[in-house]
Image (cartoon, rainbow, N blue to C red):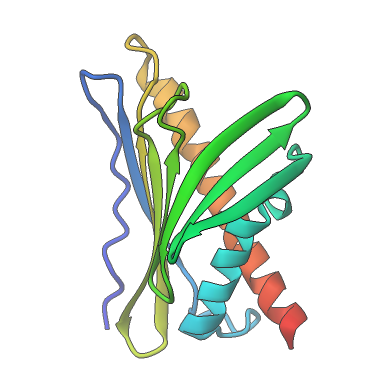
Length: 169
């Protein structure tokens, strides 16, 4: 079984956007230390990190989450006097898409988190960033640093998924 292609794509387009995608392997036969997770456990953990984003980012003072429709949430994330609003669409046991506030600095930006299972129990999580609102003039090093930060944040998200799953058992 070949894992899904772990593509890292950096594309700085003319319209000051950045696309970045990477994959994190969940169940690895070479790693006997980490417990294997089911798709449902991964889903519950990912959902938890969206509803309680403070577990990932300790600079968040509070998060208000309101369901606005089945499969859709609206969040307000507070850091001091700053408040960020976004919307989350989700398909249970499959994917989450976080969309930046349409009136904010990064309007049009999104993060899609998708669970992939190319073979039974071979779980991966694909993170796809579409970032708008970036400076028109920026260099490759800046984009690389931003993508590295996204990757580190996503590794921490998976750690929190594992922690959340362990706490439930």
